[in-house]
Length: 308
Length: 278
Image (cartoon, rainbow over all chains, first blue to last red; front, side, top):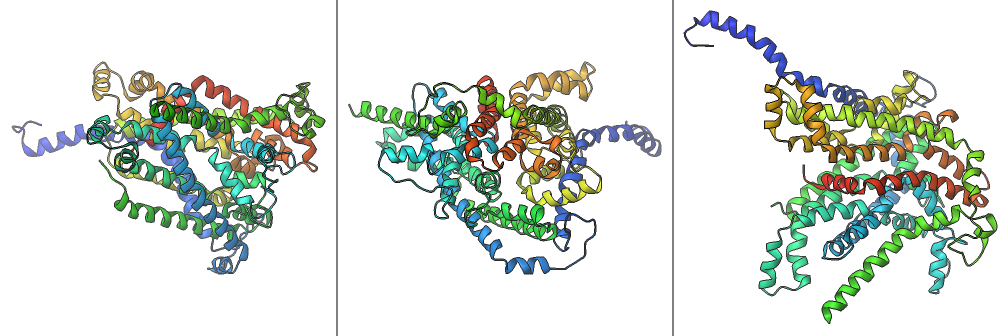
């Protein structure tokens, strides 16, 4: 509006032109509206409802339920299997995630060196990661077979007696950890992407100063890779706390509940014992655990993650 | 001399590792083509003789895998449409349109990425059973069609942001609306990320197990491949069926491997995109 127009008229004119313009500015909401609806209906309401359901004794079969306050939580504290499933999950997470991160890091370093056939190797290492988890679990069930499995056969060739991979409580969790290492290809690729970003001049400068390979890795590569390591760590923890398919299909939680992971026990409570309220309380606790763990990792990251 | 030794070691380790990665798949493939007495033979043979191709026919008689395949295809189709159309439209809104509240909405979007899915599992079961969606395709198709997948939106938005604003401005001067810009500028320029998203959508729908099991597992007509494989594994006396089990697993694995072979460039690009800080 030009300044010569009287103030009142200018104001009216401005409003007339700006209403469509203001609506035009809001068209972004139109574009994101499908997601917004999906978010409200399939994310926000269910998440809020989980907290409410955890205070009820809903069975999942009938539509009726009563408010039971914190009874579910109180009962969980005394539930031996709850603690067992939590321990199994913590054990699995605290071994498989760091181990996977370390093995993937070494593989990425090897793959990043100037080698022939880099693409072929990269493809081969990533290949297991595209295998559907249900199919992969069935395949590994057969690999771990005590009597006729290929793993015990290969170990037998070097004189190791047969191991009861999935049928003994001592080995079952470790067997599933070994299986998780088979699918570290995705982590390797993310590391490789991070390694490409490290300026080559840094290594050249270090070489001029007489640094050896080991020093270059510990002084340059690892510090500059910490943001990527951090990313993989957070993703790894969140995924691993929710491990379900593998154990559900291979062992069903056994033997002697040694692979009864948190998600498995939650599933059993909800869909086998029809205690949806109780299972919701477990879901809420898992949500808080993952949240606290992620926050802890974030807070510690200030001390070990270097951002350029 | 040292240099040569170092390089040989490198190749040796990498090759040995690749073999370890491949063994489970080769072992499953080999077993899927064996007869029962070949499976029991000790020491195990890698190449079956004779090759029992009939295992792959037999599994279709054991369980309706044709039907399972169709059901899986429905879910895959819904997630492809949701990913490529809905998610990319939403991503366009986040990447290229400036509107009040955009930052808040985007933070909400990111927060769903960190949310354990288990929290929603039971309340959604309640909601779906109230509106009569249990044992129908709807719980697995409607959310996908609405673009619930925050990860795809995020990937697409990151890519769209990298497309120069001048291109959109030029199109706007030529009379293109937002839909036109999305269709004529964004999509044609985003082929790598669209390919990656299409592949991820395929993989996640093909691989989904808990969703189909919980929300439609009660209806045998609606079982997917993943649920069917689980059913086959749990048929009583499962050990003698191991060749069928492996054949059914390969049935689920081979299409994914074929797709991977055709598009591994895009997959690796896609994974690489996810690792970049956002």
